[in-house]
Length: 267
Ligand SMILES: NC(=O)C1=CN([C@@H]2O[C@H](COP(=O)(O)OP(=O)(O)OC[C@H]3O[C@@H](n4cnc5c(N)ncnc54)[C@H](OP(=O)(O)O)[C@@H]3O)[C@@H](O)[C@H]2O)C=CC1
Ligand SMILES: O=C([O-])CC(=O)C(=O)O
Image 1 (cartoon, rainbow, N blue to C red):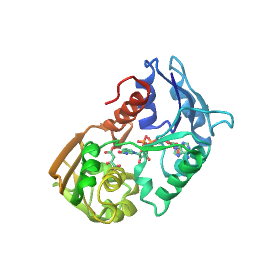
Image 2: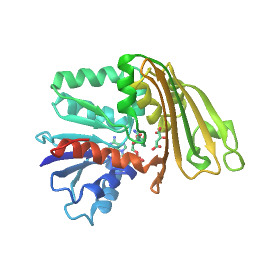
Image 3: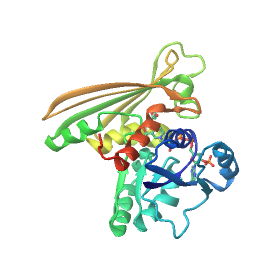
Image 4: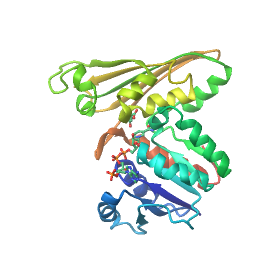
């Protein structure tokens, strides 16, 4: 049985915990929450058959097989970097945070010092296996378009690009590099950052973001060309009720990754 610690118990964290409840080969022992959310998280987990312990930091003597980050940028600084130094393997969902200059290198250095590994999860997008394999032969271009319901862009610079409450047609709110997209839209930058890290990097990956008043899905579309040929992928993700910025596939991506580590066959 694999022993897991989760950081964050929001929309993704709760979804993951619900799906892991019945897996006899995976046990979540601890959930790390912020001080202010501890009581709420305990309440969320009260009805679980085997509720994990809710703490604000990993105990010094704890040695989980995997630490799974489902929380955000701050949690990478606070919990992932120290865990790597302690030799604990980490799975990261907030891949957009890795757009910050120097963070990838700091994570790599911490993992090397701890003789352990970091796994960046595909989350809301698919085709990362094909894209990173294509990179081996050489990529020429990767173009990504993210289309979300208009309300999913609330509290982002999309509000300055158009009136999200009144637009009647799909409207482009951003066009530029993945680096610029990550700077302006940090909470929506995970897919763009994942494609960049698997492919051509933040400066050469082109991003278009669209607010669509007629859509109730998070649509991720990308096209890649290179020595291997070309491919395109369109993924229409259903948003989670608890957080419309987040696609349900992200939850399944975490569960799949953990299952691949725990079960005899991985795919
Ligand atoms: N790779 C991908 O494709 C995707 C990645 N994501 C990323 O996944 C992350 C989680 O998303 P989601 O579950 O929807 O977000 P939510 O806001 O629903 O949940 C995040 C939870 O993490 C907690 N948290 C934040 N910082 C810390 C910390 N330092 N220590 C402990 N707990 C913390 C928050 O608690 P509190 O409120 O107290 O801060 C909150 O409960 C986000 O960073 C998001 O950008 C999302 C979708 C797709
Ligand atoms: O669809 C999702 O879950 C998340 C998303 O767009 C992103 O962060 O890039």
